[in-house]
Amino acid sequence: MRLFFLIIVSVVVNNTKGQQIFGSVEFLDPKMEVFFDKDTKIEVLADGFTWAEGPVWVSKLNGVVFTDVPNNKAYLWTKKDGLSLFLSPSGMTNHAPHSTDEGANGLTLDNEGNLILCQHGNRAVSKLKNWSFDTPEYEILVDHFEGNWLNSPNDLAINQKGEIFFTDPPYGLKDQDRDALKELDFNGIYKWSEDNGLVLLDKSLSRPNGIALSNDEKTVYIGNSDSKNSIVAAFDLQNGRLQNKRVFFDGNQLGKTRSGLFDGLKVHSSGIVFASGPGGVLVISRDGEHLGTIRPGKDTANCGFDSKEEYLYLTSSDVLARIKLVVK
Image 1 (cartoon, rainbow, N blue to C red):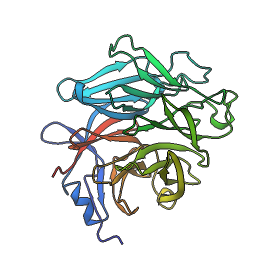
Image 2: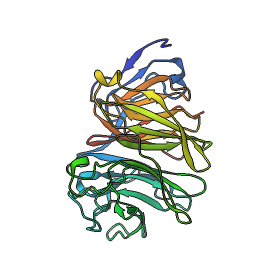
Image 3: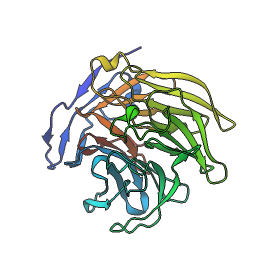
């Protein structure tokens, strides 16, 4: 039941510290106040990108790394130095047959601190071999399923065993499902490990996109980026397989009045799901209750926390932004 409704900060302005702030925060339930103060602001950190994606906090750099997918670049933002170019190219190195020049999309760190990338142009999940920003080198971890090129790996999550779970929609192909280079007749959810190789977990979703694991690693959440089936799906993860598929959150009604489809998502240490979707970033309880929305006023592709969960970083269309969380 929605107990109250509040929207704050609804325009792009500069505050007294000279920071550019924009958007609004919608409170639909008192539980939203566990995470955000009522006067919280969305702060713009950098702008001018074509489609920003994949924010991941890298502690050894003390900053957030994110991608600009169409421009085949990745950037680093730190509080000390601001914005700098991090990787160029980020994901299209002519490794695979391709119909676009798109670079990396989703990013994460493995258990050893290596940067793992979903590379659209390379149609692969790869590992950054060196941290030399001028001449990045990548190790291709997986690029084929049963002898066929993957579509364009999009987003990923890694469990404590080091297994990589990733989605493979066709967004990195120019004509998507109709692209002549598409070799698979489905858009899959996979698990890859060095010991067991690539395993197809599910191919029932039309546009599997964002992916995240619950904190106990017993549930896998998937954002389905389809205007005809705008949902966050949940699966039980049992014996390395996905079972008990269900709708965790149905965004079809919300999508009638708000722009955006489900995309990247992250799970807070409390178990609350932060899902990019219609209207911004939806904050959803473990029971699938919509607590509120971070509303930048732009379609939001992805989000990610820093190591202390002090800030949530947003890639919203052409900007990198952040919003402060209540840390208890």
